[in-house]
Length: 189
Image (cartoon, rainbow, N blue to C red; front, side, top):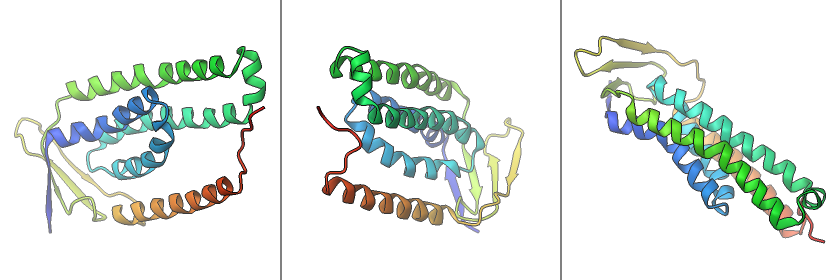
């Protein structure tokens, strides 16, 4: 069986990457739409990581970002009403950006720092993440643990990535069709 070596540095980066990209997207608002699409692939790739600690950092970061993305849909649908509440479109978008910063940045930075401080151990995965059975062993003798994990996944990791890619492509084609005919959910006055 093939063995995959995962260094402590690779695991730490995997735990931090979703938060880092979410913070970057919120700090530069034009990147939010790109990150919404790319985040699906990043989330799918990390969700089946052999180290469950990595997934524990991914899930809250995903909940925060996707919650924010869902709230942006509401704001886009009620832009005409909301801009009167805030005294204009610029003030409304500044308020939305400020709330986005408050939701994503502090908790994301906390997760990045926590992951950096966590004592990650180098792991050797027998069978890699492509197999149905994964055995993880710490390479340091003082770690004192061995985990055997059997995910109940009908798809392999690559199959999951392909599935998400097909769904994302399908949604992109539909969205582009609506965009080309001018069917925008938000209109300008």
